[in-house]
Image: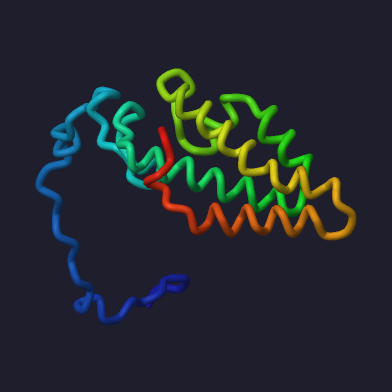
Length: 152
């Protein structure tokens, strides 16, 4: 043998790779227009912003009330001020809403959140555990409330 070369044995056992018949199949994929792109179910419960049903709106408001009353048990009047002074864009981003199309729903969410934090804000005036007690009662009430009774 020659010096510096390596012999390769068992080359016969090498399996061949199947040939690809056509590389141009990638051109058959249609180009989507932005309005034809299928919706992503992980980003939002619905595909479009203007198709929220009444039940979905009620569940969104109920979820917002539960969150607000839970934080109010810890933060008291500060939570009330936070939920009252939040911008519409912040609420829309938090609950996957459109600022212009869901303006009434955003107002409803903000109003219900402030309303559900008021008991803990009142509890701040009592010494000791009044804030935690009143906020806890508001949280339990909102957690067990029927979302179907929320006026949207």
